[in-house]
Length: 71
View 1 (cartoon, rainbow, N blue to C red):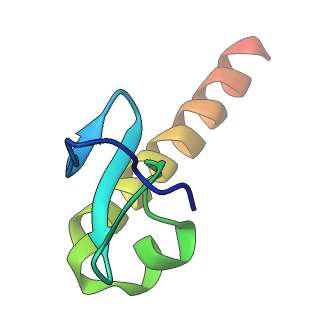
View 2 (cartoon, rainbow, N blue to C red):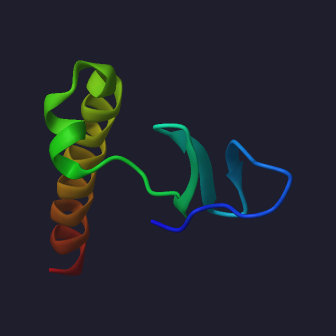
């Protein structure tokens, strides 16, 4: 991972780049969201998982309705 150089060390996220301190060194990386596995297993994402299931069911229902109207 790239290390931050210069007098000012950043922490936080700016324009899609995450800046943080790791083992006393300041590091930067591209900010990314949680993985599919983490959303499915981590209790912190229980609401996200519930909403995803609802959207999936709505998508399947809308597909059935659309196909039924075409016939």
